[in-house]
Length: 242
Image 1 (cartoon, rainbow, N blue to C red):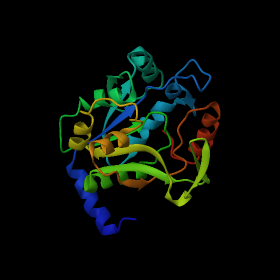
Image 2 (spheres, rainbow, N blue to C red; image 1 turned 60 degrees about the horizontal axis):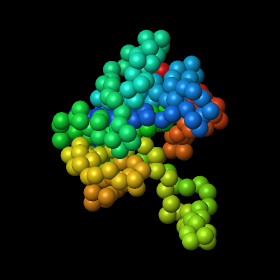
Image 3 (cartoon, one colour; image 1 turned 135 degrees about the vertical axis):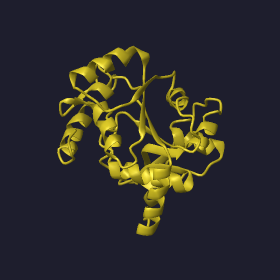
């Protein structure tokens, strides 16, 4: 955990930087058994994506928000904005073939190499503003900050048809946001696309940078299956509303 002096120092660092968040919303509704992509499903009467954007707006970092969305859903998103009188400012960018290419499209809007850039899944609407701020603070100090939580379950790895027990205390489950200095993230995304790039941390690690983990929260769930909406509504009932 960071000391109060260090926290104060790093807070000063992020106040001097221009902060950005690239919210990646490329998911479909296939696993949700829905024709509507999961980022648009209603959560407490508002689309999931609006809760996600609002969390960053409530943070002290107050990042410029870049929303990466498939072109086919741009007009639908504009319709939802009107229907819900949604007023949080953000820039809309067209998504790419993969998550890698979508993030790259979002990065094209950021020209300030001194900025801090978070990348966040659109379908993680319960992210805490405090966790967002800590990630920006950590990235300002160390260059990288990836939100993760320790596994609560025993872990086994299957290798060559045989399962092997892993040490649970050494296993972390990676979440988002994943936050980086813009200069580092941009250089990392100049690498050719590789199918092993499952998130931004894997891209930056492949470039050669060390990935620093910051503490997340198990309530920062990813909306993937139908039951996740019910779980999110229960958790959201304990959080400040839009």
